[in-house]
Length: 313
Image 1 (spheres, rainbow, N blue to C red):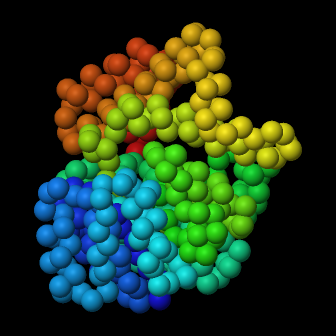
Image 2 (tube, one colour; image 1 turned 90 degrees about the vertical axis):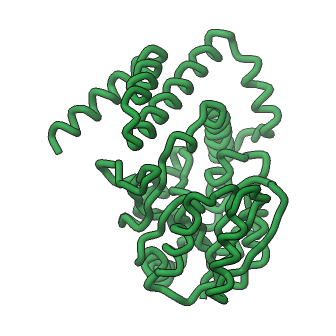
């Protein structure tokens, strides 16, 4: 048996589809813990309706504590050795759990499994031309990334990991809200491999409300800290605390901070444009693309590549 953990906050629009995608898995030996993270809409009512129909569903109630803390609460009461995460606005394809369980049985040195995915829009239509292939596929790639001091992560929504390693590392760290998955998987990678199954087993919902500049800026800073922390450990040098790193960032020159701000904002606007393109809001797509290109020339290259790929596929 495995445990599926899904946090949910004001997810009434999509949660029924997310729940059904788990209940319709080809692998059926699971418990399904849904953490209602202080929702103020009809999320709890929908969860209760499904829980009344399927005994595998267990409800955990929390105040609105955030995604990382809600996931910690779910894992804490899980009965299984393996945890499958799920996001309340996404969809797991039918063979997702079966494929991940099979992979775990074949490769006991892997402590975290991800999968490839397609991006879908708010209406559930696939909008990605290529798979969302976050993560490395082989042990050789994993060790190469480690030696280079790069962040090793996988797509968070369909992640599948060993509960004992998760608990040994203390779970998600609330200080890293917004990049808590990357930070956790970096720590868990000290205990074994972190790999992605090169199969599309998940649909990641990408919509306008899912992207914000504030999150992008915070995530980029945290991601840089995680990378520098790994490199310091690799080189045997002092590991700065997060607080010291943030203070160091504030002491950078105004020009450095302005460049960092512009690059990050450009990236956020580019992703916002992609989200609106998926929703067929073309005037907003154009607006955010123009903003992205004004702020950083790299956005021009990304747009050109996307147009070229579209023309040849």
